[in-house]
Length: 257
Image (cartoon, rainbow, N blue to C red; front, side, top):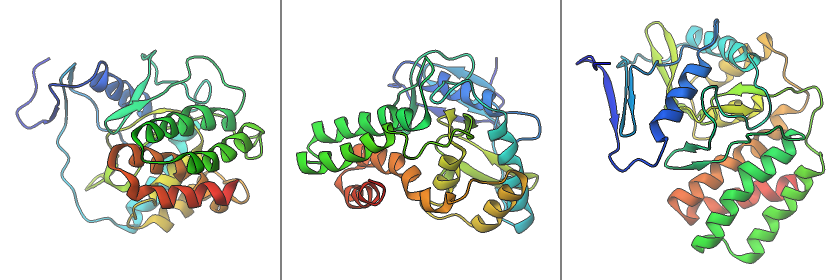
């Protein structure tokens, strides 16, 4: 496919295997009827991906309301199991520049998935880098064991179709509404995307959350669990950017252990 001259092209000539291909699969998977508009991949290769260029406008309250409602629709499209990769992909993915493990077979529950595929892989990487020490590792491991015990599982919460890296920089405010870019899409917990929205600040966040809750009633106590769902991105940032993220991640682990 030829790339339109007005397209936005991301290039990485040293991209690891599947780097752009899994992102494209995620974009297609997230594009559900009635959900948040997702930028479509126009052309994909092992070294680049082209998408339409988005023109941004200032955020508005009405656009935030629509984002909240549409995000609930996207999540409710569902996923086969926690950790499942997007349709058309059968290997691990990426979040930022590092690997994101996928679960190719069904996991028992969200806590087991979150512990083993969203916390422990990054603990090992941070420990091997020397970014966290053995004592700090033990703190995180205590939380992992609690997650595996089912302490934070909700049997009523089915695996959702989530963006997986939904910080404010991946939310693009346009004249025709919000569009999503750069996913790390997988089957996960709806609260993960909502927690990520506010991790580094986001305009109109409370309107987004209120509209979401009106469209799909959130489980009791969801605000108390925001930090738990932010632990994964904090650990990925620890691996990518260093020890400055460790104190905040440790505080989260101690809070929920």
